[in-house]
Image (cartoon, rainbow, N blue to C red; front, side, top):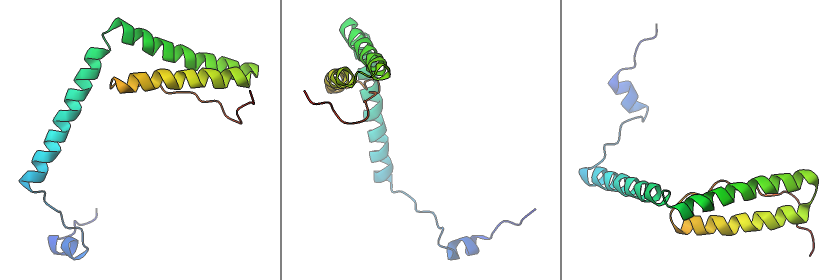
Length: 111
């Protein structure tokens, strides 16, 4: 079993611990409080029927994008991806993280 390094060797190696000031700890905790409040607000919004339907719509658009891509219809896949991004922007404006988009790869077909 290896011996532990002494405190003087650790300090000499430059691995000393930097202690945070009380002000830094307070600001970090306040940031955590803001994050918790934001998550609570988003959770409350998700109870809304309109928001639930919008999230379902975003998921359906992502699935439809995948199906269009599998069938080789790139124009439809890009149109569905554009619709998904518009719905996602609406959800983000409300503070809700939207379902991840499945963007089609490759060039956008000419109109």
